[in-house]
Image 1 (cartoon, rainbow, N blue to C red):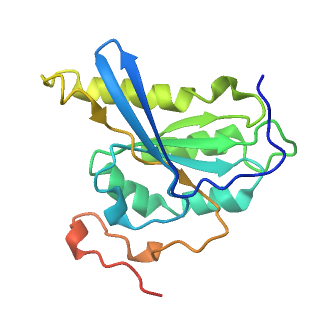
Image 2: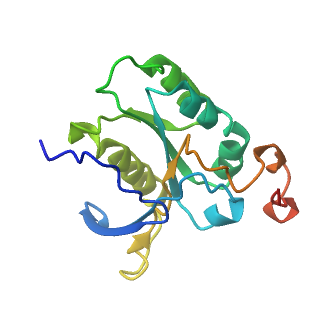
Length: 186
């Protein structure tokens, strides 16, 4: 088990790159912490999004559930989604697996829980997305250059103290194109 820092280090807008080798070739993961910045244009080029909430905070889970229209909008564009509950090592929990799994199933997402202090399961959401991505693109014949897919460009932490950059009530409804959607300026 690794060292757990006593003080939180903010990672908003931090970008991490990692090249991994899979059975079907090399993938370049580009992981960006977007925090609560929910401008749909930001997600146009994402291939996957991991939504993270705290199992110790009903507020952060409620915030994630409030994103249902947004999640449906990005899902219709073929963006893979995983919902991840953190802080599972701390009691009492306010959000249990049954509730998280039910919500994830409703939005067509994978669901995982992780502990910040025990990172054993931390790679599971990424492995899930890598597997899904490979299934989707298994039949696509690409050149070596194209197989270096920068496919994961999304990471969103739910329940941030910051106000989201858009009004979620104004997200596009089914049948609306993204060009019809205008972000809130308030």
